[in-house]
Length: 175
Image (tube, rainbow, N blue to C red):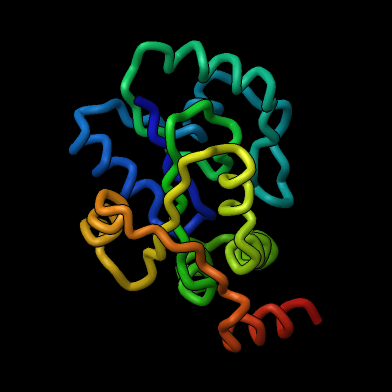
């Protein structure tokens, strides 16, 4: 059984994925660490402070690695993983903005991720790649509450663009 935990940076993927792996007695796999440790990237982009992933090689190596294992795979990109189901974590874009800024990330990288969260980019990718998708809003709740919602099937798509504060944030930053 392969469970993918996905979401934009700052949504709580690592905390939720590691806890789910413990509870399920499954291996925890960070796709980012997997890519870096195995050199599955083509270059490093100084502007975004990100590795440019060799998607074909990553999919192939990850698929071979996961064969026969029970694992919880944390990834920003759910389509990179052949899994049985995906849990997409969503979080209010203002909270994502605050937390990524507090990490010291460049403003351009913070805003790229805030916009992705506001627009539901990861959620849309999950729906394109999986039949079994659960979306949980982790804003202002504990890891245990996120997991409870997931395990009890309390899955709901999120539309941050219905929130005037999110629309205002996007308008201000795109000027």
